Image (cartoon, rainbow, N blue to C red; front, side, top):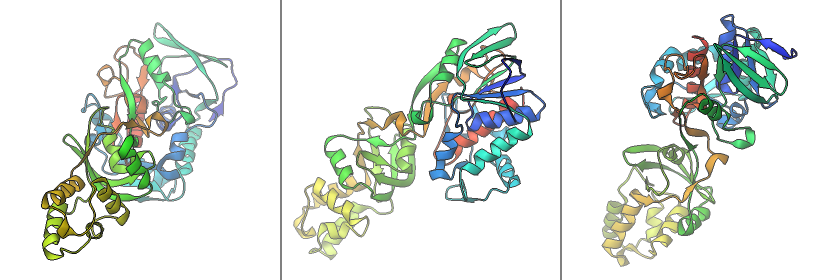
Length: 399
């Protein structure tokens, strides 16, 4: 791994973007004997790895499969995922002696720090003698014949192969930009409209007030949108809802649509309330509901429905409506927190214009797109990192 000093140079491969996909692709291509230059506009790279998984990096998911990805072409990911699997990346992690554990649902996290993954990727680049050019701005990419000319604020580079690994628009404070989309458009490629994904949902008026009152409270819930459902944690915040189930459903939701939440998926609350009215008629409704959920939530939901007092004094219709609301709470989010907190970007470079075998543009020979910049978005839980590794390997091992 060497720093850039030469003003003019020729390289076999230039990779733009030193995040997960870019770092991995650089090490793979260089290990195959290619001269590789890795450019990033930030001096401190791989920030998304660094902050992921609460600082421990959920670096893959042992169950990662095409079913865990969203794309206009759901079949596009199959080749890359088969070509470089979670087991392949786990083997690399083990080779470096990095401790890890499964948290739940196949999600693998570092025992110590996400920095271990960054150090591993940089070590792989160092071993393969990748040239690094960080803190550098790419001003232009042009093509003449079968070579690209890349002009930066420091150098001019000639290369037959360019890999764009610049990510999406999520979390701009760590350097996210639309650079990759601009390059794709420049070379005649289509962009599937980007939007924030795996992002908290926000509400207005009564629902915002309710969420703020319950801020910090979490429950296990089932969240649905059309025929898509996720059974995971839900967390109330001062702005709305988050937690794994909400983040997951946000990738499918669109403005103006409703989502359906079952706050107590293991019980039929309408039946429970009506049965309790017969067996314990003097029991206070909030007290009974607190058997199924945190008391704070029971109190707030009763307040929302203007129900209080003994079960015997509440009409059966009102109890049934309360139960139905708890098990089938249909609400319409006002929006999301946007790219500021979105974990990934939905949409991106149209997979119809990429080869699924090697991620090469069908419109421009020698131009490749990998990672989040592509219209492939994984579910929460390590799938997006697996896409980074798999798509990077597909491009770099075939270049």
